[in-house]
Length: 320
Image (cartoon, rainbow, N blue to C red; front, side, top):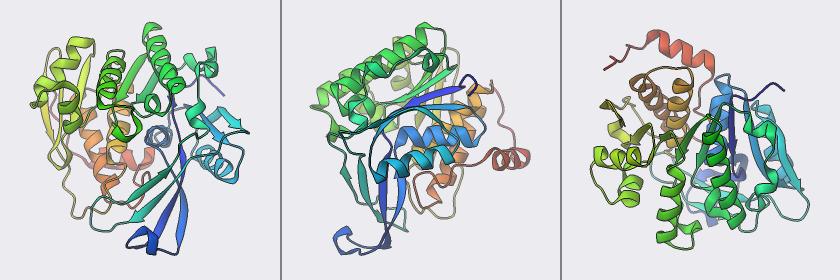
């Protein structure tokens, strides 16, 4: 395949989603999907026409084959996904919700194939991508994934390629909150665009105000910080400007899982197309609004045709 536009990496799990609402222990029927914040963003960018390389590992099992087939069907370049004969593909159980509440999720990922990603996975073709998207999930999976995350972000930035980073905090995966905060902030220092949620930014920086949170990461070397404010919208700040962009109203929230990933797809795709930050955040808000109206982690992510139709009818955001 041609040189990738975007490189993303991490763990994609098989996901068994309950067919009916209620306690997971009482549900008798599930359907199979995939789950993973990093691959959600990769899929969203691929649907918009970007050439996306995916770096990961899956087990030599039926879940692994299902994950790999699904990612390939979504258009990801999976030539760098290794089949691990010794460790299983991670999976999760997810309850069904129809009212916008948080679903119950149970994870079965300890010792998974993806947790054995390491520096051995690095190669020149991977580092030729023009952009790297990373999150705070892979570095929490294992020491080897942690080392890979740091090396990828440092190498891509040093090569003059753009890097985006979503903290995507998973406290239960870390040895301690102190290590999580230290490592996540150290990783963010290698990113051009940092994309935390408000509560994440407050925990990571100790500041409450979005402008102060953004300033913390700008001082570390970020070019821009975009802070997700949930139903209120989002705030961005650069060295020269800052602005609040209101959310896109929705009539009904069905499932909030994946909304932040959809937001990241919007922001990253727009910035890679050289649009301004206000336009990028507006696109992020719109894709995030689609995500909360869809059942499933990635089902609301639009195609390029859907984005074009929306953009044609949307009012432009004034540029500061």
